[in-house]
Image 1 (tube, rainbow, N blue to C red):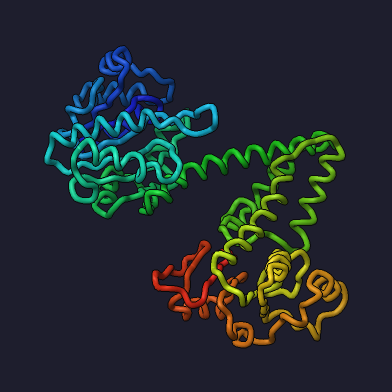
Image 2 (cartoon, rainbow, N blue to C red):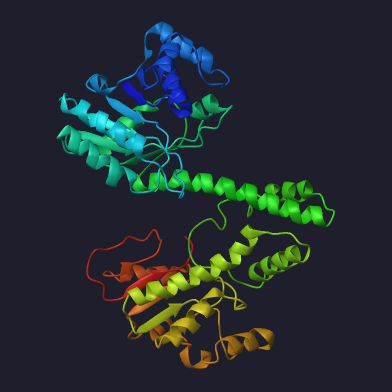
Length: 438
């Protein structure tokens, strides 16, 4: 394929050289004339293992070169990869000038060509940038329509400095956020021969993915450092602790707990996080990430309450009361706080949980639920049908087969929170709020 790479910074230079090695023809677009001249002499401005050889080889074969203006080359290319910077403004927002400028240049180039051209954004941006900023500029300056005359896609990069070439050829996966299937098909051809899972998703999901990956990496560094600070204050080796944390691939380094759903609860997580934060503060150690976990949990419960109000329902069925299915342990179940809030808001609440039998509950578990929900005997129901009777909204807090089957039967249900059950467009008769993790 013929590819224009807009921006010969770190990502653009690596991608251009690697694509040529894969058999494509590439023109890099860079405004700095000195940089372009050096590039065309086979000189690499970046320090990256193996990159010098790739650039020199590409220049010698004639399949790689750099130019200071790309507009007149759009007609030559099948695709444009936008790899320009998105630096931070003083308020934390991203500077969009470079993307806007490139979109204008590409649009003008497309206006002079009848070829179908796919514009692929590789820069890291907040969701909505491609659809609401880049795409309108492309249409304005080209006089053409996306999906008919040209395509748009997001192709996030996962390149690490010092290992970028290996990361390009052996990625964890290849992700294409596509405006339409035709756009995605074109981008997929770039990666023929690269053995990695291919995921084709929506534009905004692909944009958010890259930012989420970076935020997750930053959070992991910060979390490990907080454990390190606590360990240092009490004379322990944090590397021993974190090494064993990483060896647990069942829960710790795994997909466990990484699917959006409801707040955490139970007898361990809230209590132990509170204890860790308390003792860190007692030792004079700030742990804002750990402290923020508790605050984030409360915010998530409040968010669920507001979503229920969005349904404009007065009678709400809540399916699942214990903090997870298969147990009758209700200690610090986040659903309890949600019920209290909705009850105070004047909603008519019914609750069903097949693991809970109030008549058989004894000891501290019964004391806890009656203390936290004095109205529990009034709102608890003994069957799913009884709980659902007259309900205008249902909150499903646990992934149980019978609960999922019920939701699927509500053919006009409106799905408000993440789930892999299909969202329907029909007018809702019963609102459904999913809070379980799929």
